[in-house]
Length: 236
Ligand code: PGA
Image (cartoon, rainbow, N blue to C red):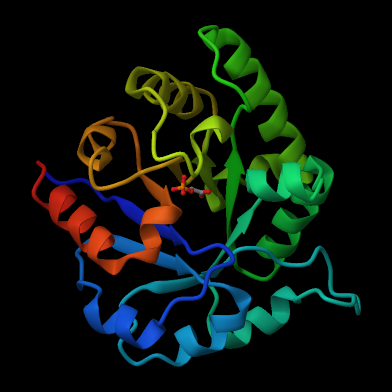
């Protein structure tokens, strides 16, 4: 029996040729979401060939007038259904705190946009207990007042040291963390992100409790995503 498996494409601050992209992206049986640059949100929304749901990589913390921000209520006009919150690049390069992340989760949920909360330890360690402790506090602080709304939230486990390197985290490590999160929390879905690619997707997919991937670099190339679809669809 095939299980439900989510493919989330994090385009980051890159631009795609969305016409060519959606003309060539396979119609997959796997549920998929694309998170384009804000610059292309409208293009992607209007693209007739789009086969997948639409998400954003960020949203502002409330409904005030704030220079440079994008309001959740405005995103709804473009049928945005998901938002990435707490991505490590924002936490560590833009100094976004877990308190801010928790406000973004609230804003997202208030506007019926499903948050994809990213968490993950910074450095590789053999000591899995330390990883669990780190994740517990990051999850708790990021959820804030929304701790009881885990069922409405998707969690993405993204160990920071594996992001954008081409080398994913060790399979047993991912498996231990996914099991720990499943045993101790109640999230709607739990994804893995960090250098998921054509070469490692099958092995990571075979982690039985995993519900999907959050894919960065590989998502820029529809050929790679089509290949990942094929590999997963052929797995039983
Ligand atoms: P990556 O990015 O697949 O390039 O490692 C994942 C992410 O940052 O969400």
